[in-house]
Length: 304
Length: 273
Ligand SMILES: Nc1ncnc2c1ncn2[C@@H]1O[C@H](COP(=O)(O)OP(=O)(O)O)[C@@H](O)[C@H]1O
Ligand SMILES: [Mg+2]
Image (cartoon, rainbow over all chains, first blue to last red; front, side):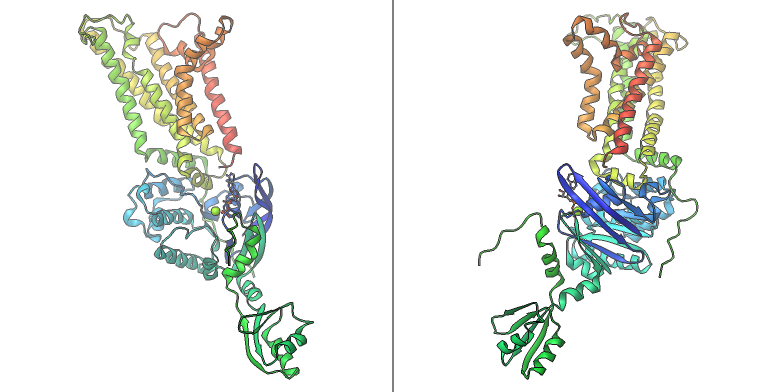
């Protein structure tokens, strides 16, 4: 379990993380979603004690990471930067790190096999492709067989094969009962893997909810109705709906009511309903909607 | 419902001996370590032999004229390579302090050892373990081979039982190792190899000369406290009269080493990685 309490980080005048609190619960995949520059990497570095918080605190399994006697047995991490020396072989990189935690070479060879690097283990890590480097980073994260695995943008820059591999691996780790905490700036990544969703923008938490709830709250919001008398239906719904729009087919778009409520109201008013469609918002759209105010770099409006 | 907490195996975890072992493996598995140590050993000995040959007249100067006597005592002559060894080991120290910052490896290291200071102490111990034996070996090698050249030519030699030879050999080993530690401290504090290399080399080679030229006469007495001058009483055969005596020299030089490590430790423990 990771508990973040009122965490703040300022770099000079930049507030990278602004008084955030959340909990990453055990045995789940928690997605940490936010646009570039939202503060995800900074938060993860503070969880590991690499960056010192300006305010607030983080507990990993109940105590600060720094105080842990067996840190990498509690939480294994893959951070943004490569984090290995180009001149060292993959195996020596792992052996050196493992030694500090009392982990032997048998486990090193095990994780090398697990991430599929056994054949290139004696090659210099500097010659690795992006995907191989990422696998090496994941091997490092898994060395201590940790209960929590924390990965910062693990699929960034990977080819489709690599993305699929990571997704499968994360699912397997979660199925083994591990806590998985991963960040991404892509909603599409989260949709496929996360049970729990924490959305961050400009250093502030914008949403902290289960994936199911998130989907529910964003998909059933708008309903498209085709009816014999649009004006009459609008009149009937006026005091209950949040907003009305017309689309270019002349259909009414109702915001704030479920399809069933609209159907019932139309029936009671004696109106013929020709079509009734809940408009599913794609999660990507929902994410964009949530974070549009917190984007660091607005793209200019496209002229119509 | 709460899930069973993940079990950490008995005996697992960080301890200082393990951190030392980790740092030892990390340094051993870099080819640059062996290149720097090997070239230090080779140059220390080679320059001693060349200087001995030159002083016996077996190497003529470039214009083919008669050899000039270097006018040095035999111990100083055969240890001519110490200056190169010093620079190479200072660079080695900087490398072991700053290298991990260049690659982002430092964050991985500190994820494994989040308490930080044990990493610094382990780096210092491991650096000493690599540098000191090789410097001693190189010094003794230069001494014996150089003296063999001198004695073959019938020139004056000195033996290892000579007390000033012992002082200088042990002193040089300590000085060179100490400068490697200062290099490590600077590398860790500055987090950049070029900057730290420039600082350590500038501090040893350029600063004393620069200050001698710039400081007013009445201020000259501070020069003897610079690391390189403080080391002179235990690294040179004939020590200039205006420098420190042996024990104060040792104290001041060790003071520099301790100060540099203390500053590096203070920064390392507090800063964002
Ligand atoms: N070491 C640092 N020094 C100064 N500013 C930083 C540093 N690290 C991050 N920032 C700034 O903090 C903000 C959050 O960055 P980051 O945590 O990397 O976001 P994300 O990982 O969500 O893309 C950005 O504005 C970034 O420029
Ligand atoms: Mg990031």
